[in-house]
Length: 363
Image 1 (spheres, rainbow, N blue to C red):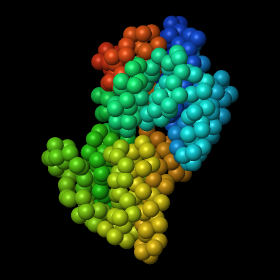
Image 2: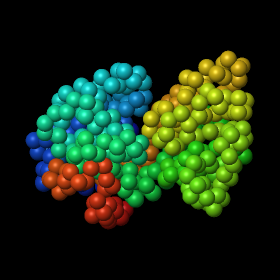
Image 3: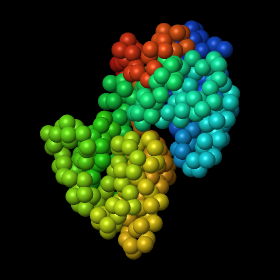
Image 4: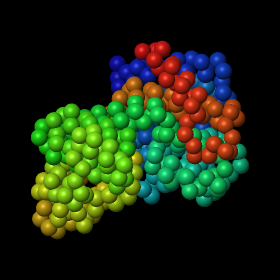
């Protein structure tokens, strides 16, 4: 069994939802546009939407699109715009080409589609979903301009604990081990950010016998990290001591070329946030060369668990849950069960409860 078939067979919740949607057809005569990582687990999501009657036009994200997923989807009636790229200009063209098809529902990841929709609005868009905290931060100031129901998957408690805390932590650790082939035992690891993803990353590296420090601007979250047993040094001290630095904040320019003098010789930097701007990869690498330093930025600053060699991303079970939330939220928008007052808001509690109950029932 190849990897995509393995994933499809193990997304038990999406399979059950797909069986239901084939009967109820909530997406009949609707075009859904998606701008999300194209990898095997996303294949399961998009084919589930197809089972509900949708036509789907899809593109990926920077440096995470996997050609095998593109080919598999294309052979099954999903129009895929573009392919693997790490060129922001080319990626922008893919997003705009997707929007030119005028989808009635958008499944966004990082706010890319909704932001560009506002630049060239068209009639018929009903709303949709946003996957990430990064996207929510980007779209919140645009609520009045958007005026559409947009449900934020990452604000679901299920997404927070199942995917962000548990699965991201596991997949970032697994990716670090696979890419570097270096031990974590006794390594000094600095994690920037103590949201749900940062908590998972910090815990996973500590469980792998690393000495973990957390840098967090929010005093309350910093206190939580301390009470959870992590070191909470000042930012510069944390950088000076680190063998490994991992950013998980959603912010821009978390570590830049100006920080190179602080970094240890041979330090390894990785980003686990959605956008490749948390680490100034080019600036850091250039400054290191100029200073005759050896500093490594993994996967060019792109998401370390979805870029680089053999990118696996988060676990099947966590994405099965998260994509069940996506499907149910898109269904609610398609049926008109949420209105414009639900613009950039969390998943409705009733959907959280239904998805949680269904997952437990399939376990």
